[in-house]
Image (cartoon, rainbow, N blue to C red; front, side, top):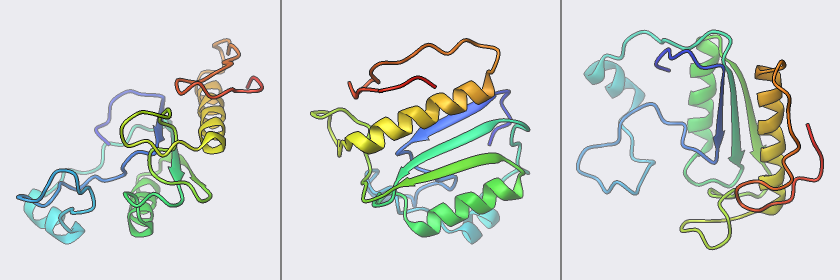
Length: 150
């Protein structure tokens, strides 16, 4: 969104917000954002500075209470309006925190979603940097077994 010269961006169970939170509310409630109308009026955001050619991959849990459907639609509209090459994957019956290792605070680890999102991320990296040799990753940061190479 800031126009930095990046070639690929991956978000695993991230928040898609571009609007600031409502002032005076607890920081742990990410859904309390100012409206799009208030953002346009009060903040007066500059024109988009999306990076042309950047591959954007979002791996999301379909049951992620922090990224409701209206926010997904708003994000897609923003990306499409800026001509971004994006891919958005919703993992079935998967909550927020699905790729955090068991025992980590706020984890909702889901092995299948973690494995699939890792493979998707590696695929996006191979697409962004085809000249870089891809090495087989046997386990990801959560310890999930990655059964094959991209």
